[in-house]
Image 1 (cartoon, rainbow, N blue to C red):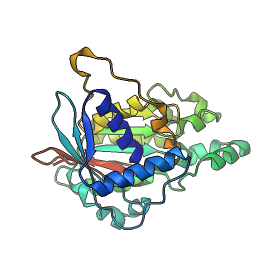
Image 2: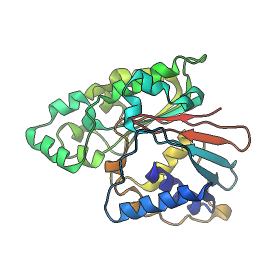
Image 3: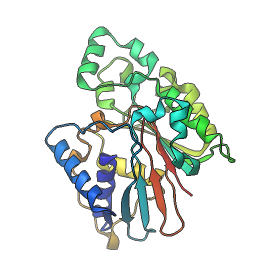
Image 4: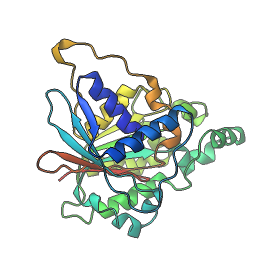
Amino acid sequence: MVLGIRALHARARAVHGRLSFVEQRHAQAYAGAIREFQRGGRLAKTGPELPLATMVDVELPGRARRILYLFDPAGEHYTGATEVESLRYLEHSEALLFVVDPFALPQLRRSLTGDEREFVDEAAASSEEDPADTLQRVLNELRSRPDQGRQKRVAVVVTKTDLLLRTEIGRGLDPGGDPRDWLDRVGLGNTVRTLDQVAAQVRYFASGLGTEPAAVADLLGWVTGLPAAGPPDGERPPPTSRRILRGLRRCAPRGRCAAATRAASPPAIRWGAGPCWPACRS
């Protein structure tokens, strides 16, 4: 979530917009997290309690102002049906961000050689749960709604591509292309087809340490309903540092979904994170 906020902050600044925290304590926590990343450290594990929303106020030139309500529950909240039921913001979701740790996919894990598995395990921790199971719990909860959990937009992000491309099975993935067919080949075909039925629009994205921050901002803007805005008066936006994504591989959810919720005035988006980030609106 921290790096997602940073990418959106860079985008807002590049187009002469503004992103700020509604509460000072959240601004202080964010600044501390960024300092930790810059030192090469890792953030503390999210606690087991359901977090309060981190509120971010976003203004872009020529676009409606939005307040984002960001939730980052621990992965334990996605490990069972009862736990998922506690994530009440899912009742209002209109968009879903599904972040897939490829090394948590059973079929891919079995295909790795001993050397590849050792290399991957040393580089980054991976979940032991199949991302498809995590997503299915969220979809089951969504289907209890009157609209059967229909979503406007779903974004699927394959993470750790910088590691993935160094494995035999990962060489078939085009990091700049659509990973949909590759996901089908490594065992997520049923999930891909299910998402096509759940949402009106589905977008796929591959992410790693070399991913441009602008691309991340574009994806987050799309899934949260904040389309990219050009700089005023035809000015060219300043370049964005690649350091925004440093550490993304290690802090990204291990098979997550995100949801956004928009209130009447000003528009608001609730963004939840756990092994599945849901994006909801009302």
